[in-house]
Amino acid sequence: MHQLTLAEIARGLADKKFSSEELTKVLLARITQLDPQLNSFISLTEELALEQAKAADARRANGESGALLGAPIAHKDLFCTQGIRTSCGSKMLDNFKAPYDATVVSKLAAAGTVTLGKTNMDEFAMGSANESSWYGAVKNPWNLEHVPGGSSGGSAAAVAARLLPAATATDTGGSIRQPAAFTNLTGLKPTYGRVSRWGMIAYASSLDQGGPLARTAEDCAILLQGMAGFDPNDSTSIDEPVPDYAAGLNGSLQGLRIGVPKEYFGAGLDPRIADLIQNSIKELQKLGAVIKEISLPNMQHAIPAYYVIAPAEASSNLSRFDGVRFGHRCEDPKNLEDLYKRSRGEGFGAEVQRRIMVGAYALSAGYYDAYYLKAQKIRRLVKNDFMAAFNEVDIILGPTTPNPAWKLGAKNSDPVAAYLEDVYTITANLAGLPGLSMPAGFVDGLPVGVQLLAPYFQEGRLLNVAHQYQLHTDWHTRTPTGF
Image (tube, rainbow, N blue to C red):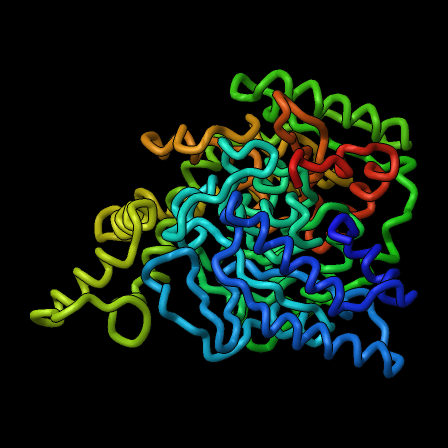
């Protein structure tokens, strides 16, 4: 039962082959048995899950249907869940129980999903390896000595290990797509504003976007359908109709123009990954796609621009965690200044403190124009490059990551080396574009992903291409040994 995809679960529930309650009990037992190896969950919500499963079965018995009705999922632990710990992977929020549900959580609950728990993550979503969590590092099920990617590493590891069929995640600079690549999953970052950020604890507000992590493009289409849509509570949510993503999966790729940026194949890319990307291109050509070389000339400036903008927004967003209203509070503060300093010093980990300091510096008097303003101008140039490219092609294809997953601890002493691993993913966040990573093969037994980018609100196009690719390849069906 644990091998079933979301689409297969929907069919099984509709055909009464099993109940949501039966499936939920199987998966909860599996999590209890196997997750100690992975550390992919921060909180298990067994009582809530069984209650929601029984309710879903009752709704089906009353004639209701729906692809998500009775489907078990988990939420990344930065989506607020009423009455349940929402920690953001941080000691700062270890004692925080959200008084309300995030819009993503409430929309999926209304669709009938069953919440199995909250998944581990890099602290406040800051990281590319899921090693900065206060609850400990998450392990990659493909090799327990390697990272699963971050910051959505808990969601990715849990889905890859078949502990559940799909999970919610967020992407600020590649935090859905990079873990998807490292764990052999399909992960989608929607257009900025497509999925509500209300109740999603902020890292960098102009970059953060929620999305689905699953094994197949079909499952991502099903989960995105439940997550997407306008939300009046979120001022950055865009009032744009949500298409039927599942209905658009079977479109022909005949004549589809795929752009391959020459900048993607520079010195930093593992040549074995480059070969797998070329194999993916050939597969799509067989399906009728037309390949064209393009250029994204400002891509080289994206990483420095991102690592000014994101920390600047983080330093502003995280100023609310001061030990006064909620979150960690130091013991016996001498005065208000001592309360602030010690609460923040004790509550935040090293990577979060580093980014807060970088951001505060970039926004300080005398440096705002030199750093933050310049980074925003580069952001515009990156967006202009994409707009020019999409006048010539329908989607852009390349590697998701320059290297496969590295060993746990390998980049801890050199944060910049970890930052450079985001080189292919962060441009989509700077421009607000939708991006998808799908399985493309293996290097030394570790999964590799191919990334697709599309114009605004063309998530359906990405899902269509990925689904057609997955109908003709079997990378996405591979399961890690022992799971």
